[in-house]
Figure 1 (cartoon, rainbow, N blue to C red):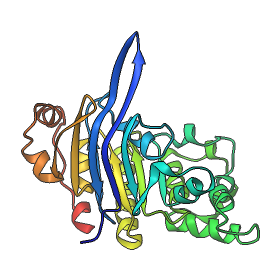
Figure 2: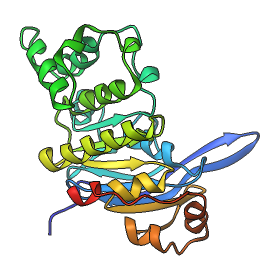
Figure 3: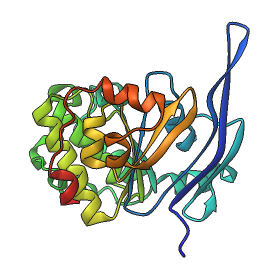
Figure 4: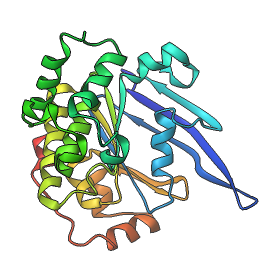
Length: 264
């Protein structure tokens, strides 16, 4: 039996706040298989975004282990960490905050190609055009500044940047929550298409159970830094067993079932 793409065990992160120690992430364990989508759901403050930052090594855990592509991810530093990070990318909720808003689209997409030595200066315009087309955008957008394009276009740019390094796993932190409903559906469909064609796995962080039911294979529901319940996404959403799961379902108006999940 093959090992999972990502295996997290007993991951812990504590903060000091107002003289007290708070466990933002409290002994979390989960795994993700290749080309699978695991959703993390939970109320604000449940630890979802802290887990994302720990996985990307933007912050360091106090305890626990992260195995990624068969190796100890937490033991990597310097050039070895930068090289492995090419395989683990992130899409944030607000790309306008994540990127320099005055940078051009070409600059945003060219940076990972340059940093990771993927394309020479001469090759980059062609690779950038191909990335834009891959996410359903015109190559003409390359000369536009990030602040000049729409929110939906910016999120497509963020996805294009994430896949530029051919990752095996992309972490999406509330990546569609700021988009209107019609654009949200288009972005979800793009993510499903990329997963099917490129065999990318996703850690999909969201408070929206309707969106999760459309894209995720499995779900883990968080409460105060711990996993309250986990399992098949639709089964958990249809019949949650934990108090926090029941509360999340009750707070979600008319969960939409779409054909997008089946398209994957």
